[in-house]
Amino acid sequence: MDKVDEKVKAEFKPLLNKCRELELSSEEKLPSLNHEIDEKSINLYLELLNELKENYARFLEEISPIAGEIAGASEKGADVFKQLRSTKKLLEDLELGLKELNEAMNSHLKDVGKKNPERQKIETIKRDYIELINKKADMAQNFFSQKIYTLMERLKDETERLESYYQPEEGR
Image 1 (cartoon, rainbow, N blue to C red):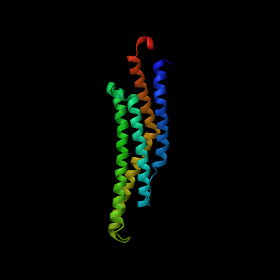
Image 2: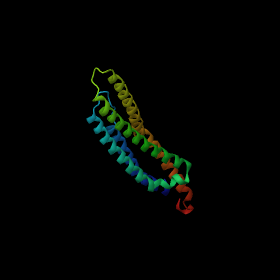
Image 3: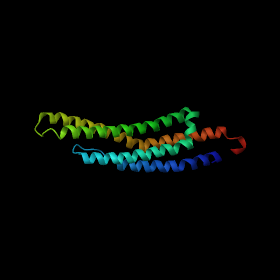
Image 4: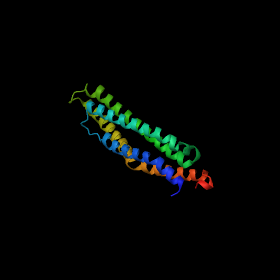
């Protein structure tokens, strides 16, 4: 292993540790919703999701100085950063879906009696929201349990390649 490989490996080690923390956090903070969900459960889910979003935002801040320049110098690096940012958007969409579900449940379900025919329509909407939220949560969990590692490996390899290219001959 040459100096460039050692340097890049050392730079990426804390980031890979952070990836592991994000993976564990996503497993804990993105449970599947069931159809018996209530306002209290949604609010708790929103709190947990907010913690995950904050941790992920810190991760993105941490990665930028180490390998951010790669995005400007390499298509592969730019693609990795694009995918990392798209996960931030996925988490924001998940939060929006939860808030919309909470609002729909609060404004409509409370006002409709159990025997009212409108209740079935509202329950269908609730079920659709839950299905969409669970799908997005599964996508986020998949990202944090698998894809993030692949992206980090690609970014690490691209960083090594570019740093080796710009390294003076005697420093290799």
